[in-house]
Image (cartoon, rainbow, N blue to C red):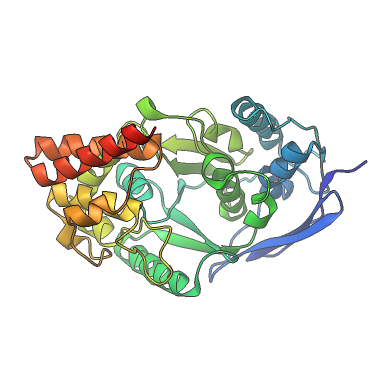
Length: 353
């Protein structure tokens, strides 16, 4: 029978690799911790299963893994499939065949957290300081070399100044999911949960920073209803920070110089932490401007202006919600220049849709 088949894992204290065979198309993938040594999970199938569901659900193929999967992940991924298929009826829930592990870690440890340096992950650390390890994935296929260098420098500085251990992981596992699901709305947490599963090294919680507040949640790759189902016997997954909106997060960060100096929100830059020109950059800069701290956020390389703000249009309902937060906060702060340009951007979007 044609399947999505995940082969045996080749593993040591720094790396894991396997081959995912999608209906005869072999995809070698792996991950490697930069510098540090870790304790790999006993159920190595837990690392790869979140990735395998996307080609399987898109193509209608059962999943077969050679390595063992923990009962918690096996049950949880079935629920992940059901929820994803509810949100996207073109996806089909598929059976999973794998040995079941009955041995988890005997060690326990404080929480770990996904970290990009963005507003959501910076606020999650500020709001949940019990996290001792921060996990960042370098995408070997997509991250520009100059950005990798800047990110590595930023994360090393963050490690020194916060006392947290930063686990940087080189990985190409996104290539398993990329043709079969949308990164923002379907696949990104599966990829990051796979990496976190490999490096966790103990029984502990994984903090997943929220992108949207509870009152604005929509079907998404990370969602309060979804994230906990990516758990394993050793890893509890928690969606954190959804009790506040994006502007409230920025306002909280404005009082923390360390996190403020390490902000990295950009997904478009090819040579710096932030391009200071895209939608995410300009809206974060506007929020920092309203809070009166943009000059202290040194990873942004130009001042905010109404003209810069107006150059980036609101492009979907989520972006519109962020724009409304900025407008309302700017009005409350007496910054009519920011409020007026935000209001105009909202009006242009509403006229288009």
